[in-house]
Length: 490
Image (cartoon, rainbow, N blue to C red; front, side, top):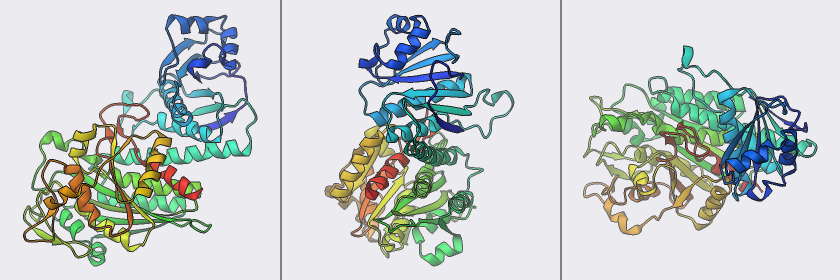
């Protein structure tokens, strides 16, 4: 898609849809709305009155161009009193979705858009237009595709404005890649394919990437990852992406992603309904790929590593069993309690590898527990952290992007649930506080490094459109992680 800046008048632009964002207090005095209402002979203000449009956040109003505007359709989007970045993202996403239904050319105007807002608008247009169409044929293919989008400026398009739009597009491309990976069916996305995508995208971005096959993983010393893979016909992969900035790095951050390309539950088999969407269990890995690619595309002065622990969890004749005991990369022995709690096992070895890189911060993303969704629902991620400074930075970044997180406790009273009588650790506790005991298990493998664990089981994959997120893979977590890196760099 081509997203560009324009100083053309919204009244004279020949596009399929003209979208304008407006605050409640601007409804009657916004200069652009006044100009359009005059061109429409008062029809816009009449529609605002008739439809009781109050410009609440996300509220929309459709008005026909009536031949008096060059645009075929006019879309007014309420911005409410939301912070600028969140309001403009909603505007861009809604406009792109609506235009996709009816045409291929969109013009978008938002008064007072500074470079940060322009970046958000460009990103929102591209992510709003996202649809996963790889397997659609014939009449099922979309009839319209958004091909051209203009962001209308009140002033001139200076280099800072153009750079902001370019940045937004780069991050959006990474988010949409993550969505594609999460949406891809498991018969076409094995651990090997996922690793190859990471390698190919890394090469395209000019960053280093090393892919470890099964023999190399065994030699590397990742017994827990190897254990989860035992029941599978497909080999595991471990991926290490490295973005090294040209300038001196202000920090080193390692992102770790759970890459379960399909989770049957292993011998502790999931019910059929619980297995249906388990292609999405690699969303943490997809998020990690997108974060590293975004950091490279933006040229941030932060050294960023991405670690992907990739396998499926199947029930073949050599599958690992409840009651088995395995060593981990850092030497701790782990008693297996439930083979459907495999994510924390592959992450444990990956986190130990991350610790060896001696980073300033480690952040892992994983669709880890159903308990997290029971506690927080489908739209919010659980955030666990062992460092107050990192927690404050991350929560501030999340607030800036509008991605919903909730800080959860690392409750020491639950740590006893992980005690084993025959090994150093059990890898699960009781069902009560299950998201917390999972985080406590992961903490065992990060040492004293400042670390955050983000359980994205809910928002990584949605059953329907919600806010700025599409049905299916969402790319949740990329925006906040990139915002954190940008703040570290500033």
